[in-house]
Amino acid sequence: MARRIWDEVSSDADGASRLATALGLPSVLARLLHQRGLRDPDAAQRFLDPSLAHLHDPFLLTDMGPAVARLHQAIERRERVMIHGDYDADGITSTAMLQRALEILGADVGHFVPDRMTDGYGLQPKTIEHLASLGARLIVSVDCGIRASEAARRALELGVDLIITDHHEPEVELPRAVAVINPKRPDCAYPEKMLAGAGVALKLVQALLKDHAAGAGALSSFIKMAAIGTMADVVPLVGENRVIAKFGLDALSRGPHGTGLEALLEESGLSGKRLDSFHVGFVLAPRLNAAGRMGHAGRAVDLLLSRGRDAESRAAARALAKELTDENTRRQESEAGMLLEARRMVEKDPEIGGHNMLVVASEGWHRGVVGIVASKLVESFWKPAIVLAIEDGVAHGSCRSIPAFDMLAALEANPDVFMKFGGHKQAAGVTVEVGRLPEMRRRLTEYANRKLEPGDLIPRLRIDAPLSLSEITGDVVQALSRLEPFGSANPKPIFRASPVELAQPPRVMKERHLSLIFRQGGRAFRGVAWRAAEREAYLSANRFGLDLAYSLDQNDFRGERVTELTVADVRAPDGETAA
Image (cartoon, rainbow, N blue to C red; front, side):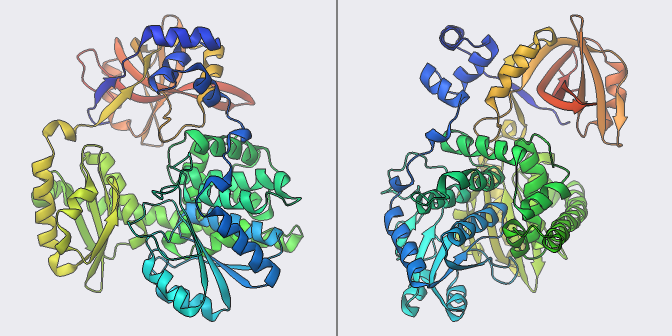
């Protein structure tokens, strides 16, 4: 592990104590809630005990009424409805959810998911033309379309009605459509602004099924799909998103499931397990995303829509789920090769690695994987990174950043060097002519060199609270589990224990990780330090008086739940990072 600065979060002891008394909470849980802004007992209680009753009325979303009315009209008239999705897990689950809801209502409905390589991103005029040629009289976008004014104009010219549902930032002028549903619209008073695309699609499903006999009973089926999209899109897991994630995970863990989702869970080794945000973010979502990265995301939508219970349908679903696993394996292999090449470029070429921003490009790299590789470079070097795949004289790239650097501002400061670009402060996409790559690298690295200070390039570790190993009791673990599911805006707490010792020398696992036994005050716990095998010798020589930063995990071992530690960092007595 690279050296990191430990940032210990300050605490209002009196405020946390009042909260603990008001709600009867362990002091460590009250401290965490207070630190995260949940200082009012009612707000804290609402967070700890989310309820489906906390879901807002979907008709509070601007344009929800016209959207529902137009869809019911299409159903009554037997008009062809086409759902336009996106090729990531958020868009895939959104597409499947809305199509299933419309099928319940008897609609003539189908879907279209663009191909990353040939169709590009978002709602395009040529796609409107294609769907119109298939007989679509109404097109509904999910997880895209908020900036598709040109496509909306083409739909108007062709006499095709358009409903847009999205969660990305709108432009000043909205596309012309029957309805534009997006909580980020300036004129939308909806209380939850940070829904994922799947969250917006869920609200439309809620509204559509509000007076339908299947509405209440079907909610758990839809909310578990929305939970996958919500957690995959890394939106803040607070407010309504927390309700979606919490009850979606419960439904995913409990079942029953449709044929396709059942096959996906079986293929992922998750059947019958209590699922958490890790399982969604690192097991399920990568398989869904791999379909769009390495091939066509339509296969993932088809899998989630699979419902036949006969042997043939089940076999087809299992085969499709296996395809997604194979695609994910291919993605991992492609990613590993690209990352190795990219790291060599950074480490061997000072013109690349000697700046505050890393820009790497190569022919033969897979466009569907550049974003993941960029994220890995940021993790490894703690610098903003741009990774570009060169094809036919054009470089297609993904940008990822660190908290101290606004990537979108960097691109906006150099707009003329790109064919096109767009994104957010921490993630963006670019397209640039190959001949202009040296100029692009020079201008962006100069910009980053001016903006970033040396201290910005040292990763920081948030330490939430001190918690000695002797304080880890069953009651504390149970209380902390009430904070789940963890994710953006509600991270898993990191605790500090000091001094601790290693009860025995570290053991290397799978050539990359360390298995450790920590002991303090008569208590001992097993811990895992991921990707820290290179520190084995150092830790063996410095086993006493260690500073430990860790999170708590519950794992199943021989039929029992066992508390273990995940090592975030370890410092030797002199303050040097030890793992």
